[in-house]
Image (tube, rainbow, N blue to C red; front, side, top):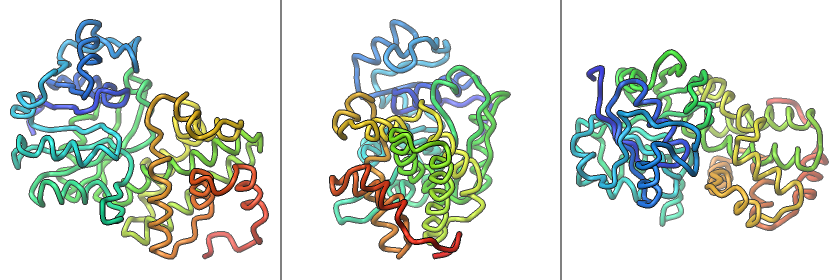
Length: 339
């Protein structure tokens, strides 16, 4: 890739805007598009994202695109930053306008449950929609949009099937405050990004119930173990889950109230119902969508994931948060790191 690229970012929420700002700060020519024209017009006029990042000015080389298609045709790379349930729809929308040389990157964290009841990683969705020849990459790690937009130090992982391609993509994002690492473990990186949201809900619930710091630490530790066991069974690597896209993202999401999933869990622990908690947050809480998928994958692999199971039961309305906590505390003692 040349030093300066034309990059289209699809998704003008907080994370899409923050990554667009990062790429523009790296002197790339960036076009940002979202599916709400009124919001895009406000961004054009105010040179900020007034709803999500109101106090961060957009760089001059970050263009707000009202028409996606012309921008796609001249792009070197396309970055998708939309909720996981919209990922396939976006691919279908842009497919006629992509060429085989364009790198398709996503910063979406989650899985897809298709019409056949299968739970798919997003690279599987992309390969189904775009074929095997499109260069694909996923970026993931411990990141909050506001801090990236403000230029605070951050590190992430870029994962592709081809490590040389990962290095090319990493150079798009890397700068003095944003450090990128590479991996060829797409399954591990994606599972870490999806499953940590479920554990963050559990951590939030525990804090909402005032169960203390000891409990939070135990949830993070046992949650990581759950994620690792499932990830290895699905073909991921243990070292991935000990890295930025695993442990790093898990700790961040479980411990800081910038995390929507943690705040959602806090609200449940403090007595709010699911609908009220989601409404108050006002953005997609990915863990709500991911928990049933992660739980089903675990059942298929015969992997025990008690934290994930209890979050799923709570969100299905099968038990209260108090009952879930009591169940977890009353389980029989067992050897650590043993089935």
